[in-house]
Length: 158
Length: 90
Image (tube, chains in turn cyan, brown):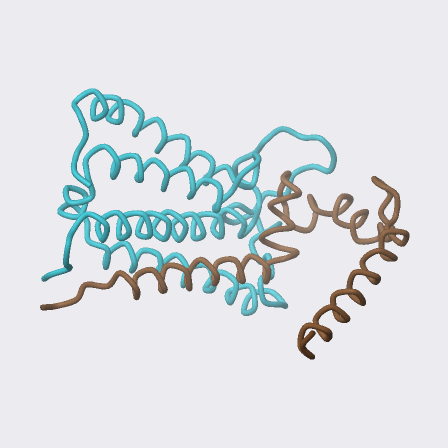
């Protein structure tokens, strides 16, 4: 599909940064607010799909190739399993939360009961949220982009 | 009737009977049967996982294997789409 009119492009130019900020906020605050890696990644990927609709998949394909997005997706998955294996090394079990209560990165333990939000809590949960977020962003975006590009061209070449 | 149709109808009837009688075994709404694990997670999630969000602590810590399976599903979906729509050289 090719690009749409100038009105649509201008609207997308305004809406795209706001969607990015909101999605990345949902990913980063996954251990404090509703949401997390999957939900925030879906928000960011829908913002990228909006770019594909407005500017056309050929223009987006010139900016970024699907191999790079696919490798980003693999990096997210490998990071997720790496954090889980670090739990096996530094803690006792697979998916062990070795950072919680250690006073290191994200190591603060909140007081029991209803407390205010402290970003420096959660142990390995923010790291896993980030890895899953990268994975979902790249995965959903590459699905939308490749399908849109394949429906717009007659034959694949180069 | 063919033999296959009779067998299919019989299997369907047996499964339907099991489903029908399972209605009477459902616990009342809002009253779960076993609450030990729920109480443990609600009481100890802030000490054990160090986060205020109980849902995220369940998804990424207590039930990490489930999330690993979800990530595997997404990975295989992306791999399948990229395999179907791969670039074919002329």
